[in-house]
Length: 502
Image 1 (cartoon, rainbow, N blue to C red):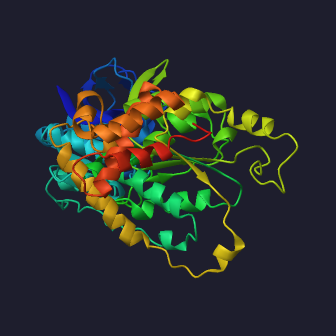
Image 2: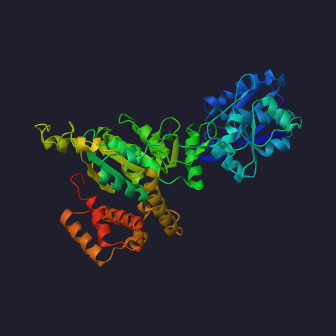
Image 3: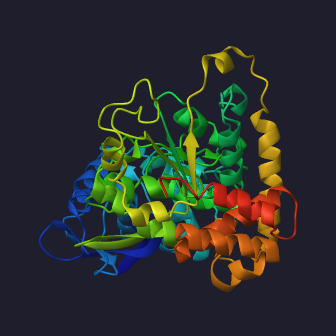
């Protein structure tokens, strides 16, 4: 008779249900695992055998065959240890077969039977709840999985606890969700002295999730401004937090089962590879753009990134998702991020400083910024020149607006957008508006339309640039609580577009 239980195989953030079948049949003693397992899954038989031996459970001198169905779906990872052990225990009539069939399990086994936490407990819990099954996992992974309120999650420390639970000797309680992680020591916009125009631009970008490029001399405050963006962004909604945490779960970034309501802020170094930024590797893991989903991706020293890496950002910026295509996998990850980029005006950084500019001006700047392609720059909603801060400004006391005040205005603008896009599930902010939706929400008044037409003719705006100006103008109008996009809103949006960089 065949005993069976269930587990999951991960394909991106999706957890596909896998039926684990076990048959103990007459024949020469053997333990085989079939169904397209990778090396880690194939080695599970030795870990399971040792764990059962540690519990004084001897395997019969018969042929044991474990099949992972569907057989054409690749199975990767050590989390198949526990479900294989569960199916074998059910086949040996040690645990009830009906209990095994109603369970989705995942976990790695130590040789002494201890359960080791694994990645992906959160998406596994989502899959289990959809199939109306209980999720069994290591205790250390239970707090993470319990965030899926619709799923019943049981966490165990060892295989012995699992057996006692299913035989009724010592039932295990359901796991409780981990703590919501709080942001500690957030940097405040009040620390930034001067740079009032830059802070205004940051507020607009945060309110509409607009991509922004900062260009300025070294030490002018570009990185300082970017590091304070999380302090003015609204917290994640429950749906966004779960969506973001699923990506972090399969990447092993959830600490002790806690999830964060703060939007991600990722700042990879300019030496990062294409696989690190976009995603890839042997298991087609998510990259930085997906880890920044619903948050901020900050690329400092943008021209120093490799040209190949920068060009791969063009499609994700437009679509909000990325397909990582490999020979053995085609995985799609969400990547709806806000891109903040910073660059010096030239290699030496002082092209605009008459007292320090190198003799190669302006060729030095053209060569340096020329590493960023025109199509990528055209995808930037805003471009900002960040001038150096004078010593006199640095000596002044910090009297600017704190982040809490700016964040309140940003939250009000985001709330307007949430209500506006209730009937458009693919759009969450003004940056997502396209086609007829954009025309409906951001059509300027007659004066604003005239100004935009004149600017488009004079500066040669592309169609993409034209629409991005409208999106930014709509956000500025939201910050002003204006139902209509007017000429001043168009004028300010154009001021962030009409720069030498764009």
